[in-house]
Length: 206
Image (cartoon, rainbow, N blue to C red; front, side, top):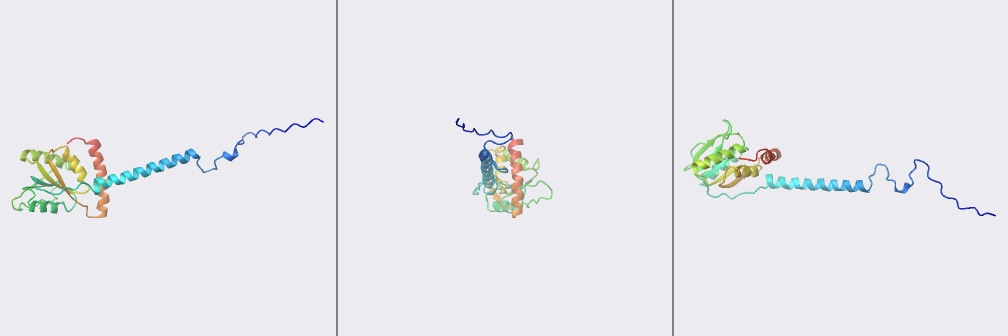
């Protein structure tokens, strides 16, 4: 009797997956998709950490200078507490001149009654930190100021230094004042990010 040959496996029907064990369940990503997701999550986490650290360095914990005698104390206009600190520095004899930025008529100009201190209230053009830095450069050239103390907010500290470095080549010491409330912190940090980007990208000169 002729031996019956071994039956060969039937070919898979059309449209069927020949390797069902390797099929990825619906709704789940394959190995390549999982790797991409992990990389995206890692990149997003790194960007978030970088953003937080940069924000802290620029706007929350900027460099703080110890006041020393200078040629002028200059107050940049803005949040509360600046004028009181600027007047205090002048009264304690850190400079013979106190210059106060007064962008609008509603901004206070201290009376010229501090002993041995000349008080100047100036109107920057434009009415911005850039305008204040330009005024400092012009006044310093006319009056021979080689060093100044700038009173501004903690959040504006880094941008004030940047603006002044483009206009004034003298020594700059910044004495900042913290925003008065948490809401003010949040608003001023958001504003400073936009203003810093403008200074770095759109307005690179004095």
